[in-house]
Image 1 (tube, helix red, strand yellow):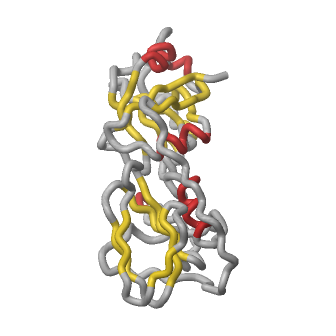
Image 2 (cartoon, one colour; image 1 turned 120 degrees about the horizontal axis):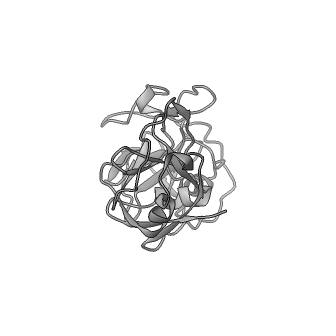
Length: 240
């Protein structure tokens, strides 16, 4: 699992004085409000660190991005499951989604050397160009399917989540439909459903999948896609 937007989460952590991979609060789309229990230092999306006094509240939101991150100096001392503090809600690993009233423990608050604010990655232009490597199941698609995918503009669907980002647009031509056997999946894989809908797998993707994969997004493209809100447009660009 892990953060939806790893670069943005790392920016928040580094500005708070943490290692880039410390656990942080991920807030998708809507606003989020936190209250300090004791004095803490926080950063949102790499902004200059701010000290919250005991009982002080802070509201933040993702703004023009799809997600925002709140990092706390010392990190969040949440349970480590299989070497990670991330929460995989779909598999009930590491906990659950946060609810009103939850209290999160903070790790070692030993004074750290102040760090300059970190410039967060900017939202990509529209339509956002997303580079992908074709394959591995091109033989499951009719001739011209890859060219159709590259020539068609898509929009991020409101039905998207951490498991996968659905792309709305003209259906991609499909051939044999589902795979004969489940195939291993990776983050960034572009599955195409039986009705021609592309789904880009996210950090909470299943281990295996039954739909053919027409391509896999590059790491940079995965980061771009993670910053896009529903309705924003993308353009898939094959490389290699």
